[in-house]
Image (cartoon, rainbow, N blue to C red; front, side, top):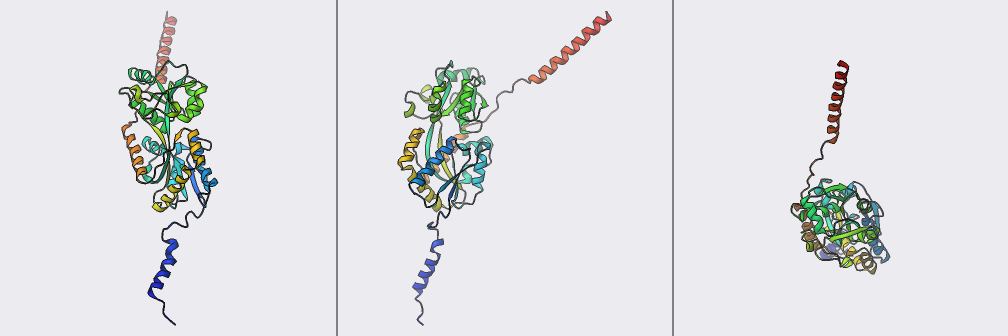
Length: 348
């Protein structure tokens, strides 16, 4: 029997190992689970499902994207689940700048460095707003009060979330200005709080503001570097002498250790979805700028946005007087006084 040529033997060995050589032709082998670390129906959920639909309808992937909502603890439950998932590309996460703010605020001991960034797929502007009948006609007016009467104005925010950091950037934009921050929660809660006079000022995404403005609120400024097309008559904070810029960037993340090849596959998949008419139209409706970043540009943006938070210091406002102790002390004093008066009357 003739012996096989060494070249043929090597070729057979190469073909035998080729499916496992990292070409990624077997990926994905099952549905791609996309964790949204917030409840269904919110802005992040809606955003993620836009991409899910575009990928499904245009048959961009042999496996479906399955959205899994894991809300709670300001997004940290879902982000922890993603961090601890198998780094095989079949579990990823869509999470905006909350991945930075939760870590910076102390709600999580992990952050962007614990994930592989896949892509950035959009930027949302931020609006600072007051109630329609508010005495403040501009952000400049408001900031003068915040400077001259520190901690008097109440800023409604979702503490530890990007909305809170928008407020902190505004505060930092006017030296000496101080707000009293209070927990209000999501956009609809902030709307009710500012309309009801429980807070003086709050912040919304552009999409939220456009949705809520007829309900009785008025915008003072946008925190973008330039005016937003959707609100072209609204000046920026910079135009009003407040050195504050902030926005919300939508990111997609994979667990640390996911191979670069699979990260690239997922980034390409999202890039194809971004090019569809459906995604473009829906992002326009939500007033989201269709920015798309991958690779070195993405990593630079991730580092840049993280570095911006180093400018922010979380401080506690001056404590309120201990009213319960004051009341108790006055009660004791008056009780003693009444007892002595009564005793003196009986002695007389």
